[in-house]
Length: 111
Length: 116
Image 1 (cartoon, each protein chain N blue to C red):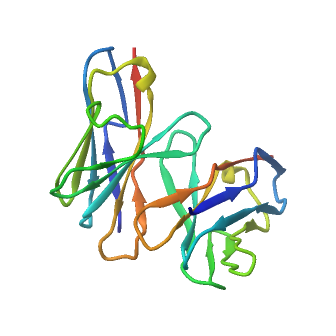
Image 2: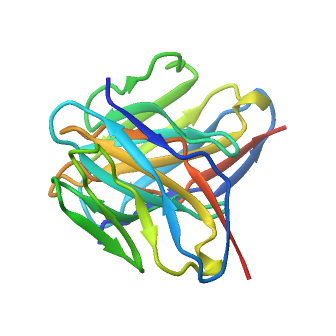
Image 3: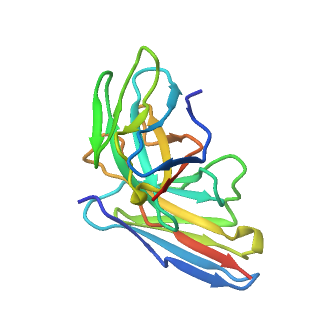
């Protein structure tokens, strides 16, 4: 079945460091891919998405490119801030409403 | 657009009582809504898929008689935890699928349930 694999956390970075959170997937067909962010005590907020191969999603300085050849959707940001500290979830949906989530990666940014 | 609300945001109840959590899509119609449960520092676990006007579809291992789901309108789904026990304490998150967009879910802010 479909699956999403995220890198284990927590990830601890200094402010202004470069961020990469790896996400790879297994799916039949052509899934849509998402990154969600969850701040402490809150629900999930959509960070960015991509619906077809080679699409790049971007928002708030974060980017991820849908790579079909490597089945990846890695999240990147050039310069993180303390306010980016949160848990990040990679997810896919394969033509239905049912999401497959990764396990989440906790990011902690130190001032 | 595409805002989903949940009420209450936090609730404390005693063992043996029932508690109802509401999930509303505020500015769109949602034929399909989802209920998730999240344990501390873990990912979301899908509990059930709720379709307007029909019975919910529960995931394996989720007790349908304990977690009652009602989706009576295109903007409201409710989750009732019946005869709550301390092990039901968790963070419950709902989401709604916007019928106008392609299978994207919009998430509510979550409800923290504590059973004492």
